[in-house]
Image (tube, rainbow, N blue to C red; front, side, top):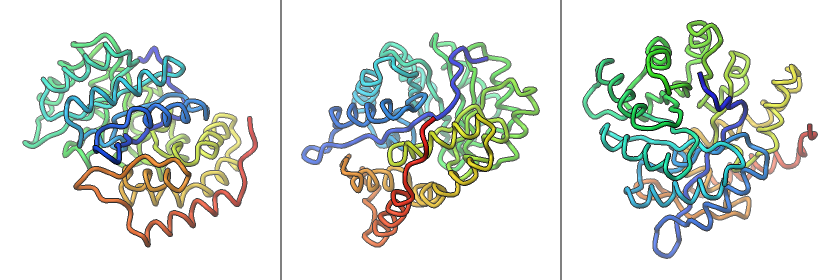
Length: 303
């Protein structure tokens, strides 16, 4: 099992792009990572879906990985996202992340051809065997084209030494209950479905992988504190306050909505990369209203 003992909020930064040349804005990325770490998140995970890793070439991916890991500077664990069609590409990126100082990699298997269970296992085994850092298996069938069952996820953790964690983003709460059941509660699994944040914690999730701290870090962290303190009435109230935003950012695509929200928070991070488009004016008005309502309710009490 994981030696990192990640417990809590794993924050996903966007990848800012320079408005002049369209490249990765490493200064802005470092500033965003600083904001997240300073807010109190428990880990930072650059280059996930929120970080538009699918739209970066190799050089850009490496630039963003180095910039984010350097900005974290060991203050909290860094979990670098890897999503590659080829096993060779995933191995190369995992090795690069390890050399750059990442504490773990989160590997999402992508598929053009439908992969068999044997092929999926070989993919993850090759990546895990290539590095000495821990590997988190990421299940997100909506974006990857591959759906890993709870049984297969637990099997990977049990059979490959440094595959130690699971991120479950199918949006099926019963799968999280099944992960807990199959592992006897020993497997650290992390919720990647924002609208399920509270029920996932109740189901035994070790943490919440989310881009929401880019916009509302205090509320996200307060929800985690309330759950861990067993204050479920408070947790339900905190969750209800942030749920409209969580639903909004998922429904509009995380890079698009979170970058729009950062601009509204006076922290412009550029526009999404084509084919993604900036948020439409009417949707931006909706986001403005959601954030205003959250702000007017005031900040949650500190721990």
